[in-house]
Image (tube, rainbow over the protein chains, first blue to last red):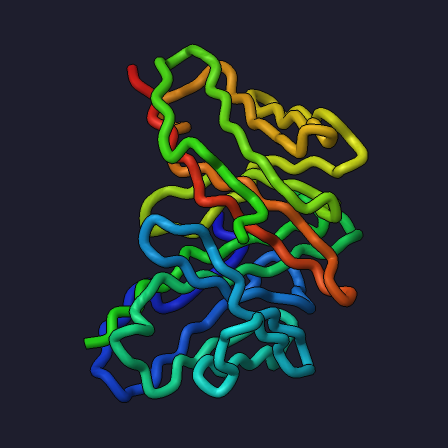
Length: 122
Length: 114
């Protein structure tokens, strides 16, 4: 079963609206979660690192006021694309890093990914 | 600057034979390497990883080899099965200012032919 849940899987919105994407860690508590973006036929590009209880760390070139990240609990991080425009249309994927120690079948200190969200801005 | 490269965008292998997926990297500071498998409209699924201090890690049909001097790693799948058809991404882990970051290759689309 899924280790990380991401919703919605697809969203179509009008230009100028805001879209919120949720990422939930189902099998472990994740102090660190990550948000990626993937353009067609390209690799996953890290947008930001989401830290529980503190501000997200954004990669160079990623607008923090455009892509708001909230990591309010150990199992939930949200990405809000504010005032979305057609150029924001992309595939957004989140991941959660499994604990370095502990019991269970999951590999330790590995990023587990959600199913992704296809955002289309009209 | 593409630090992790998968030079083969696609690979076609007959069912039952060995699939070999390759990945090259440039940054000697990478300390961990991972392979992910991705189906269309889904997120990447973790397959196997290897620490930079090892040269081989095996898990069932999947084996990852690391050649640090050549900055090259490969994923071997044997025997290949139709369900292995997917896009495979290699990723390299780097610790920057205390935070782990993954750098992904462009992916290789593997097709297993019956």
